[in-house]
Amino acid sequence: MSKPVLSVDMVVKHFGKTIAVNGISLDIRENEFFALLGPSGCGKTTLLRMIAGFEAPDSGVIRLDERDITRDAPEKRPLNLMFQSYALFPHMTVWQNLAYGLEMEGLPRGEIATRVDDMLTTTDLTALAGRKPAELSGGQKQRVALARALIKRPKVLLLDEPLGALDKKLREKMQLELKRLQSEVGITFIIVTHDQEEALVMADRIAVLRDGNILQCGTPQEIYEQPANRFVAGFIGMMNFIDGEIGTDALFRAGGQALACDLHGLKRNAPAVLAVRPENIRLVSDGTGIAGTVVDVAYHGLDRQLYVKTALSPAPLQVRVAAAGPEEAAARTGASVSLGLNAAACRLFQE
Image 1 (cartoon, rainbow, N blue to C red):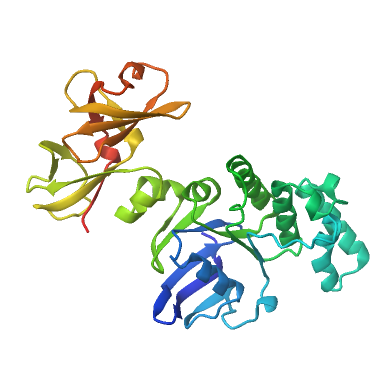
Image 2 (cartoon, rainbow, N blue to C red; image 1 turned 90 degrees about the vertical axis):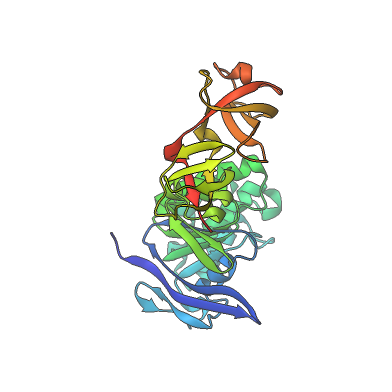
């Protein structure tokens, strides 16, 4: 494993009596796309601002390439921060916006021209070089802001909710565009987002934050399939939660049903919560499953989300089925169905 390009070691930040960041430690690797994910107020933006140098930690150390930068001024750090607002100069063309930072560094005109033209090509902005920000769409402005941040060749690029101002379709397109550009330019990206789908699509690794703490850090697949606790399970994707109890026989019981699940070291003869995703519940036709009644159906194009009332839980279970296929007849309100749970994909939590 490569050594980290950026290390955060037991960093703490208070705002009055509020602990915004509570002793966070993490290592971010070279050329990695890393996401800080969590709800509003979880500390992710404060952590990003401390990495950028706009906030000073109360304690802890931040290192870049093993050098302590904790007290360095923002302009002394080989980092660049891209804001959600983009903050483009309205009186300058796209070309001039990209050149401005290099001019402030005092680079020769020839080198500036070469680097600007190369970056325009990389970000597919060459045809827009002579336009001003008012003549650009939201997605084009986003690319210009990204190009301006990248052209200074920072060691790490910090992105604070960079896609929040875009509509859904453009945001989805730009997620893939950001991932492509990060791979091409070979720079470490750290993105702050509250959008779990955005983090799953773009990031190599995700840190899920809550109340100033990292609850879990791992690949998107690890976070989605093996959530560390109930909060992470509910925050990432759609999840069914079933309250019950683990018996002395190591079976999980709820609503008169007994299910064999991996206990992961949990206590027996104690309350527990079973978490199962909609795609891990199937319709069974042999009558051996859990009886239920479809109380609502949501159409999503390629699939349908069934809401099935069972004895397992007061809330209907969400079940994902193909929109066209053998399960289609059951995908109607009022239908009686039988459900089977994929025990290997279920998670149990005790809190």
